[in-house]
Image 1: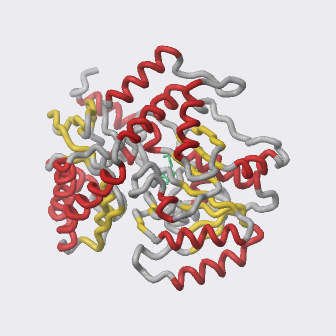
Image 2: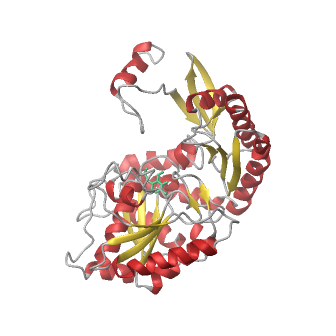
Image 3: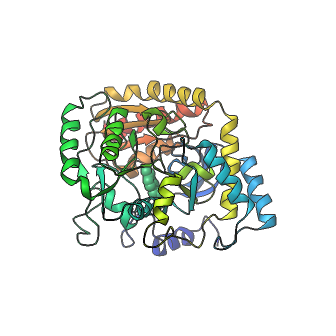
Length: 426
Ligand code: PMP
């Protein structure tokens, strides 16, 4: 079928669900012809248009697209095996990746479970905590989080954003403290109320689970490392585990290798995903300590009870190792600091717009928060016309650019975001 024919997109409209979309009243997605470097090649009004990707394909494609080292890793791996089961078998790509992850992880996290998506990694982390904590059935978290779309992760997502009322009876009910105050806001009230809430439920809590420093899809909310430390302290004081979901924050996105480093906390369980394969293939990982692993084994089941078909997929593991090797060749601190400065400078003019409530940045994350819900199709189109791909949500227009974005790319991203917001929302 000709990609330019109306039938081609017509089939998409009639038959393919897109994320969080309606089948009966679908949106109008842009067709991507190819992607290379920091650019997506789109079809817009029947014409081919190159745009800078400000989203890194939902925060994964940190090296950009068609990356020679990652292409080569995939091709080399295809030549030996693309997949074998992980039950009863093992392979070099898993061992190589495991070695790298253990080297990179915060101290003592040296047991690795290779899952296939971020949501599954969070499922696995929660199951680990439950199996390791007999008699404790609840999680403690904060409002405003996002941990994935399957039921266990959804149960610790923000209750409103995660639609807990709609799924009442289906979603397990966990304990939610208030969202931690934004970075720079006073913490005292939150510290006191969170302590009181934890103490009320202390005997039931298997683990605290949070996205340290930055709540991503729950609202791009940046909060203090002191709040993270407090949650970890409460957990440890009361015999609960600490799970950090670093699927979005990890691998330098927030300015350090792990957000855990900036918080000076080592979790008991760490979830990694998204950028792990540089956006090439779906893969995630859960790391924990020998102590937690032993507690899991001491549970009734006697082992970790999870084992997906595509666990440790060799193709994904090989590309992940190549991606981590490439990341190790960058001066990440300097690079993310430079991106942070460019985003802060470039987005600052948005503060003058009447539609804008707040502008904030953290590492390679830049956020413009509006007073009202974003007109997503209109802002997206205005940004495309200015040469940039953005995908806003709720009242947020944000960017998480590839780490290889040039100063010109970053200038295009920030000016198009400011321009699109101004044009559409004033
Ligand atoms: N945790 C966090 C913090 C995330 O941002 C996401 C994805 N946005 C997930 C979990 C779920 O990952 P996936 O979409 O790969 O299932």
